[in-house]
Length: 189
Length: 189
DNA sequence: CACGCATAGTATCGTATCGATACTATATTA
DNA sequence: TAATATAGTATCGATACGATACTATGCGTG
Image (tube, rainbow over all chains, first blue to last red; front, side, top):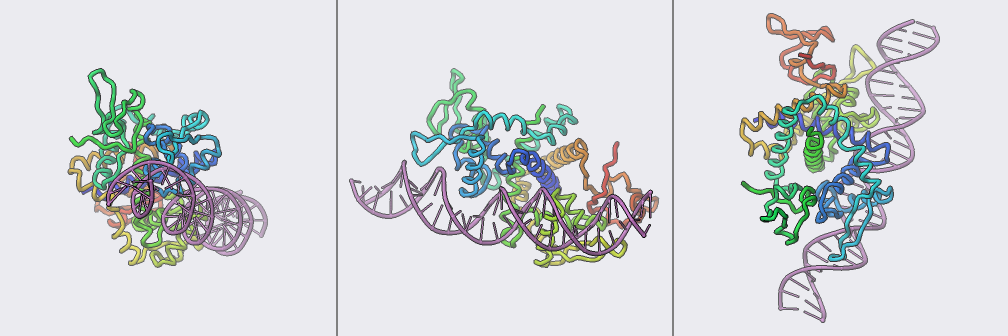
């Protein structure tokens, strides 16, 4: 069992990444969590761009997330839009200013520099390992997976190569299927 | 380049781990950082068990670390000991109560459960990948490595299989060489 | 339809985090 | 011996984050 070793490396990586995010965000008055929330909103689909989506993703309480989103809105990085179907719910869109910020800050230099010193094959191996570890953790602990449609059991790829979600019973555009979804459930193969 | 992919998985893993640590520590009134500080002190060597060692490891300011250590001492998980050589410095020892806590909480169930669902080979691959990623990040960004003597360029293994540190110019016991050190510098091969 | 219950989101409060700054004490060096 | 560097502490202010209480809307069942 390599449990301890895996924990040790993960703990270290986790710390380095968080400190980097703190340093980076500081110039813009953003905390690590807020930056992560903004990033999440920039890569999630239209079923997931709500406060509750962020709650599930970041694993914090509604109150905390509500605070973070208020700040992101005040700073002009996101905007709130009413949901026509469900009036309790709102959608959060990343503004052009927010998109610009994400583009500047993510991925952080810490990771970029490291990848510059790793060849294709090494990067592939690392990606595969991280993916497997993440999926196993999520599966073993009954967690949401937040994947893209391609790996989702609700996704139906039709003959004409268009996409359809069997959960929401709606057609999906090509670009939408590359966003992450809070309803995602990994195909059990 | 897999920079974005690697960042994404790492960010996710990092978040899950931190949330788990928060949940775990809560029962004992410990925050994630404090738990990490305690764990660090339980695996570092006698050159590294000082407040400054924790500062380097966790990447926080002296003040913050000082606060965390005060709390750990109040809760009886660590004890402070004067350094005979340098009177400015103190050594932090994990008490038996602290050791017991670490044994209970680390590694966290999140990781343990996942490892139970991964075979030997998969775990080895993941360990290797995490190790390589961490080392590359540390090297590429000029960071301290916090490794064990075995991989340190200052370590001298003598003919009689005893160990000697060429930086501190002191002999090291076998068990000491398995602890992590803040002066560690990876062998450049 | 009406009632209860579930869910999305917000507001507020208290404890704790964490960087910044200022401080003391000891070591080092010129 | 004086200047400077280093280890550690104390304090403060802004923020994080869980807990709780609240409003508003949707949903299900009789």
